[in-house]
Amino acid sequence: MNKYDDLKKQADLGELKTIEYFIKNGFEIYKQYTGKESVDLVVVKKDRMYRVECKSTSSRSSNDQSWLVRIFKTRHN
Image 1: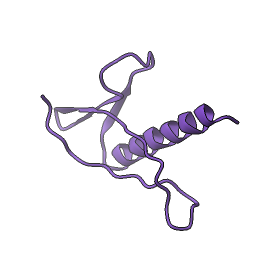
Image 2: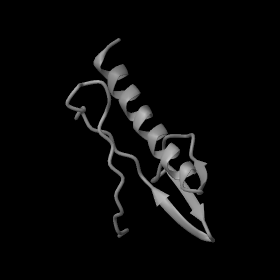
Image 3: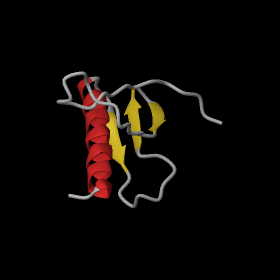
């Protein structure tokens, strides 16, 4: 596996973890598949729609067994 494959895997896992978080919190999930959209996900709950962009990091947990994932709110421009 080359470095690109590792980074792609890391990004995919981060996105899946984000999807898992929103599902557990009762959101509907809409995912784009082209890879060319301005957002990765659109999530909906109680008639409110949120655009979600997933970012990855090379940071790992202290035991190096998992990726560190943070979800935070930002404002749109």
